[in-house]
Length: 311
Image (cartoon, rainbow, N blue to C red; front, top):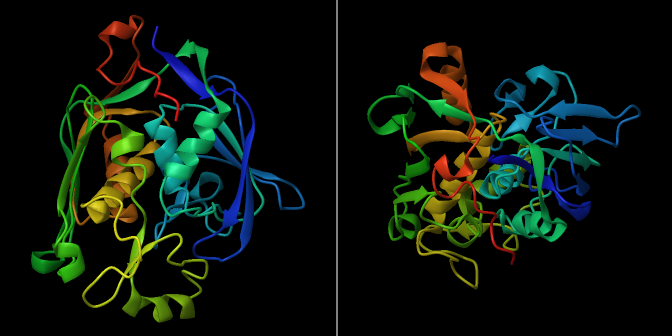
């Protein structure tokens, strides 16, 4: 049986929220089978649990934010995509996350620190089958036309493959790879994707901070570019780090589904909002998906049965 996974022990992290600038503590805990991934706001007078789901997403401006049932006015947890991307990369199904604020800490701006934390806690197999959502027919969402066009799409595929194309019309970005494809059956998430950092443009920083955003952002947790070059002294971690970070984000955005996908995802200039619209369009069409598990793990697509090697 290809089994569900959680972590083997409790692990903790402390860091700043990239938008709020506030110090936040995370405590990651093992969870029973069929729990899913659940955040718990421990800083509130009465702690509030927020199970992750496509319908819990309540805001997608600059990050993916969830609230109970996706309801406005309820307690939120924002910027969940990097942590969820790490969970997807390690095949984790069940996790309890106590958080002392409303934003997941950015740490180094990638998913690598979360991968390290989770692997340090150990990956534990559980006594229930892992359930996948298999895409049965194409589902696509589009926005804008011409130069403003954006789209995201899911196609049937017996595995999990993601392809992303970026277009920023910026020399520092255009000189890097604009198209990245990552297949879980062929690559290693922590080696090929996890270290890609979030990025931003120096010209936008003042405007973002005036709106209460990017208050915790710095060269320590983001790639920053001016009109012509990358400002980080150590340069890029990957030649195509910009596009790889968009893949990292997409993996996290799609993991709010609560089940790993068997699908090929492709996108052009997509973001958190369009990724969530894509999931909701998929779930809205019963003929477009089915839930499957593998009693014989050798029949599962390559890359899902193997536990990721330790650091």
